[in-house]
Amino acid sequence: MAYLDGFNEKQYYEGDVFGQYQFVSLQHIIEQFVVAYVGDEKNIKKVSKTEVAFFAQRGLAELSFDTFKSIKSQSIELPPTLVMPLPHDYVNYTKLSWCDASGVEHPLYKTNSTSNPYQILQNSDGSYSFPSNTELLSNSDYTNGLDGWTISSQFRENSIARGGNITSVTVDQTAENPRVRFRVGSTATLGSQSDVANGYAPYIYQAVNVTGLDTISFSANATSTAVGTQTISAEDVAAATSNYEVAGTYATPGSIIRVGFSTNLPSDNISMADFSFGGVTYFSPTTNSLPNYFNLGYIEWSAGESGEKDYSQEQGNFIDVSGINGNIYLVVLCIVDHTVKAATAYSSSLHFDEGFVDDVIIQTQSPTTSLQEKTYQLSDTWNKYKSMTPAENNNDDYKNDDYQRVPDERYGIDPQRAQTNGSFYIDELRGRIHFSSNVSGKTVILDYISDSLGTEEEMQVHKLAEEAMYRYINYAIISNKSNIPEVIVRRAKKEKIASIRQAKLRLSNIKIEEITQILRGKSKQIKH
Image 1 (spheres, rainbow, N blue to C red):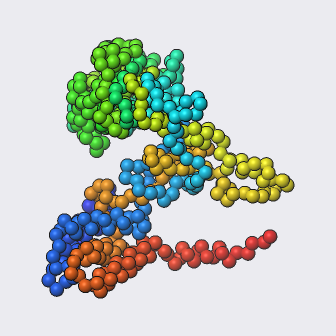
Image 2: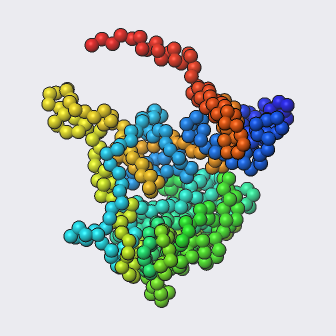
Image 3: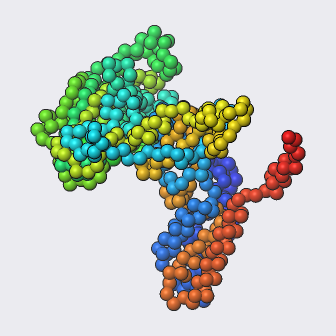
């Protein structure tokens, strides 16, 4: 039976998934293997489908590492922190580069000359410190922006014409002291949602290692807003940078600030109503409790409250962490809760509100029994590396004046530094990529390898490597069975190796015309 039976070209070209014919699903591989390789008068007389599925997934992962094409990539604008988190399904990288104004990619080179080690907290005499009543957070006063903090990822500045939200988490540097500013401005969600605007709950969080601690306390300074209204005049509309502003008076539903601890990571995709938008299903947090966020306790500001609050004073006790080894999570959350019928569907200020937080402080109530980190995930080595002007930026000598004794002549140059694109290193322990300062603000592109097992959609095999998958599964099953003659096992192994080698050659995509074009340039004579 043909693969394309029941499928016409009109369906393909009017769809949005192109090029899928070159792949076959892993489920199809499993079913075909059972039909072709299992049964009487075959090497594998009997095997469960579960076992075939296991070895098929192992084969898919192994071939993804060094045989299949690496097609996964991520692109970001590198923030001032010079740090990019590793993708959630990252296994290894194939290339890192940055993109210039012409769209040309410039390769970045890995440096082995620096790292981000665990910086042990020490006393003034150099001895290791096991302090009590010490600060456990990094950058708790936000003087370094949001460095060390993780921002909720579910929010994007969606097009207002489609309905959505303008939600941002930034550090307000205009105040007397730096503070986190949560801005939540929802517009009506059009269409199936009947023009209803819904609130959101953006957050930031930081992991805190409480191994060896008994109890902790924390405090914070925050400002919430009360329920009210906001009036936008015609003059405001004329001066607005957004063309979505509409004059009128709109509700401001007020904000609630919560700061507290959880043993689990905070949940993404939080909205004040259950609905789907942009392919993401949002869900409502539990009113006034949010147990998924703060199962260890929290303090709250609402209805225009502001000022400093201390958990131990508010609750009359401390948080017991004596039974926890590892990290818990300090979460700072801003809730703008409403479900309101839209008065005007296209106003970016509709149901707008905000909240502020600063000076989040955590303290231990007893001496620690494990080594403490000097600054959370920010070693002296990393701070020096990101603050310096990279050596590769100095085109005159690359390293120092000793390498250039005569004009236009260089001696002792290290080829790995003979470039100006920039460099990076990967902190495998913390799952981050650190870049040199000359890459700041550039569009960074990461090409990487995964194991192709993350989602059902990516569990597929290129047809040029389909035979290699069958041979891999065949050998894996035979080699793990008893009473199989060794000659059959060795033959299956040779067939597997040969088929994988053939798949690599096929997937290398070598074209004789392209090689010929490259080799033409090799015949040029270079005059000295």
